[in-house]
Length: 327
Image 1 (cartoon, helix red, strand yellow):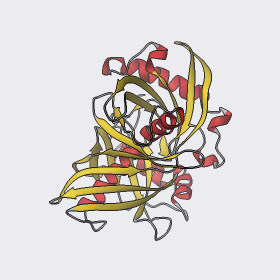
Image 2: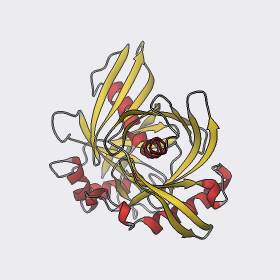
Image 3: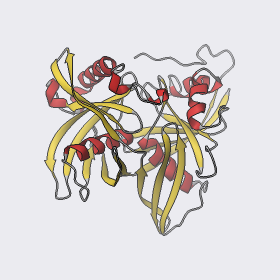
Image 4: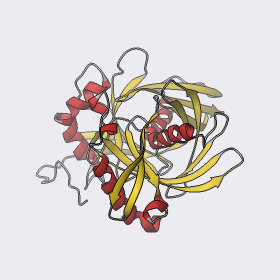
């Protein structure tokens, strides 16, 4: 087994890009289902888990698009499988597509990179000046509140949790409601309560969507309210996704979910911006690009940076071709 990768990070969260992995299906959504039990899953484990990756690694396999309306498709993956959406990955892919020439770009203007993902069609609008990437705007699928104020009994007391769709289903609550704040010192406790709430609500009726491929709680967002800037609300969050992974960035699709919730509650107005910080202090800026009958179309602005490229191989006799996880 031999695979070449290009590694990026978006606001601190890794994204490993891989081309040429065999996948089957007429759409990216179908490819995701097929990948779970196919060769692609073996490649995921090989590149994601130790000793070639780690429990918080994230990446994507480039696929053909669903049709000619998109530039390419992507299967997002993490240590536990394949996700339906990934905002930080979309931002990284926008930068990658422009930097590599995969999508012809304007060196002094905006270039739209259109990508098919399992939850639908998304865009990364890449702005360059004199060839340098200055910002990337992730335009997500429609995001909406599924149910608010769901009572949950936890090991840290009774809380109320909102379920919101931002390309994936997120459970979201104030970190203060479980006696925490979003700081690196609390990472272990935040992971524990994030996992607890995810599994408590994973089968909740509001988390079961019409498209069963999108059902189930993908992650738990715990946030601190930091007040307001001159542009709008200011919050810090940590998203604990899959089974205990910690997003180092403010989480792209999670930020979209927060935009939908804040828009529905009136905290975020149409002409305002959400300043959204991560647990490590990196930042996304988000806004309501459009209102729909049932939610909003969010746009999330951030930047991605290239880390390097790697060539991974399976040495003859290596006893760990599928990798391992200690979490």
